[in-house]
Image 1 (cartoon, rainbow, N blue to C red):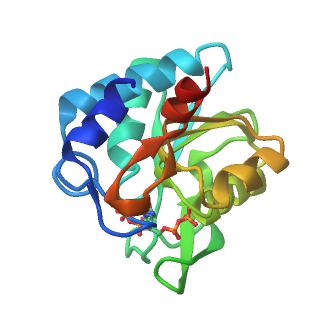
Image 2: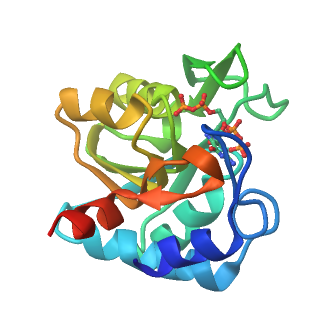
Length: 197
Ligand code: G4P
């Protein structure tokens, strides 16, 4: 198990077969030291990609994205889910449907923060059905910039997102890959592989 998988085992709570609660270090209270480690790991994995900008979505993507941006020395832009009074002109927008919340959100980024010359690394906290990631990809593509890859903190590999992104030929690097949350237990893809060896 890597550092993040160990932390999930220690502090994560399985709420159901589909939902993992990690609000003691990622989704509500944030552990800065862990975020720093996560940022360094994404920076290491995407070091040779010529990344010029990081794009994420509020709110829980921001902490890992900022730490990655700090290590890679590039700016971080987060897509907003709500209309902002100061953000109205020159917006790129996309619709994101959440299967979890059964609602559609408009997400938006100001055009001026993405240039056609940018090579973008998208970062998010969870990959479930992939709808947030697809919305972010749409925004980047609309701007004329290029998506170099996606960094995910926790991938729920038993949901559709990872497959959908792989089919689109996008490089996805997930730091923890959950094979199952059945019976109140977290099991990781790597553990399953180790069992097979
Ligand atoms: P998708 O984007 O991959 O399709 O995911 P989905 O609609 O299912 O997820 C909606 C929200 O729930 C997202 O956060 C996502 O990060 C989060 N989420 C999905 N699965 C889990 C899980 O097992 N545990 C936790 N803790 N969160 C999960 P959001 O609504 O954008 O919230 P936030 O970023 O403001 O915290």
